[in-house]
Length: 47
Image 1 (cartoon, rainbow, N blue to C red):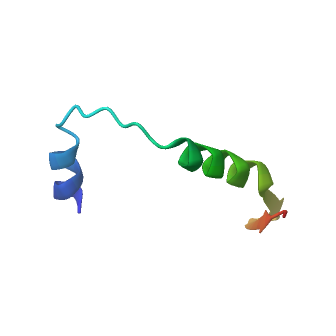
Image 2: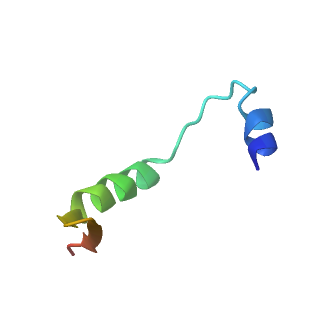
């Protein structure tokens, strides 16, 4: 896997995500809540 990543990182392509993709990721990150309890992490989606 490391070999694949190193080969792909040499190209200088500009990534242009769709507006829908950006909106989805922003909405997901707004709804995500991470709760720390002792040494544990709980992730919850608040929809």
